[in-house]
Length: 354
Image (cartoon, rainbow, N blue to C red; front, side):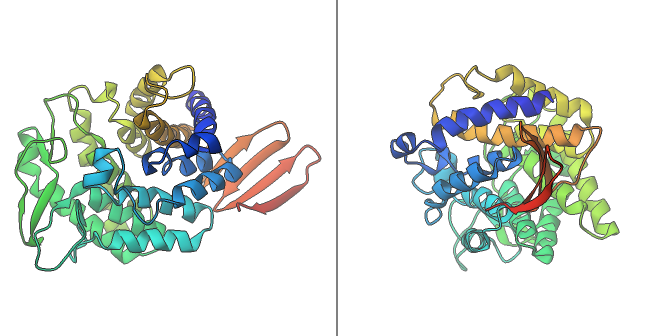
């Protein structure tokens, strides 16, 4: 239970901030808030999750635009919408989830590639991205659009295939442009958002690990032939990542830990999760600067993956949509927006998440 206990400590750190009206009043940026609702959901604290989602929802109109986090402000403006949509779906807030999806849809190319920096506008140059295309898959799964999810996943597999020669040289190109998948070119460059270099430490490994995660998630739902292709693609991404220099001691590997756990690769999932446990501060965050924006942001995300890794590695797994929480009253089993409460007198009842 070490990972869940670490995540619980992280929730205490988050609660003191994102659920503190005075603190929130002094910290006006979506980066502080958009991952926190999922952290509370994974911890089974649905009331707090709803309160955190109310705070994050105030930023829905702008997404990542205007954030002090450069990546959210300039590259992945749609990323906050994905996390808010995820939490809204879990908590049964359909209108909010649909609003987030509609905003992300503007960043989807007709080929189902996910775009970065600006929405699609026919006739204008665009830049498509591997991570953003993974977001399209996740959005489609959340909003029950299986055909869209598979179309975007097929883009991921195509880009993986085209990257084979690059991967043999120790690089994976993340971005492309062109009129269609049959007529495109990789965006040149080896900057952090454009390429994952296998022999250079400090790469943004999550840009490949998240697509691996969604491919495995989709593989669990697709028909057999497609499921096998998606699972095989995810494993190829993980094989490449696990051979990267310094990947198991990197703050950018949290999604790799979760992807490894999803792939039943306990050894590598533990390597990543144990690294983050070694980085946790007394207050519950995972970075030295207690009040840094990135510390709040990343603590929420790491808590999510630690809860999920704990569940994946449990010898008594339950379905992916369920989470257990224990307290002095009894046991709480959260499944798809409801909490089954089993108290000391053995009464059992379902309580809506809201």
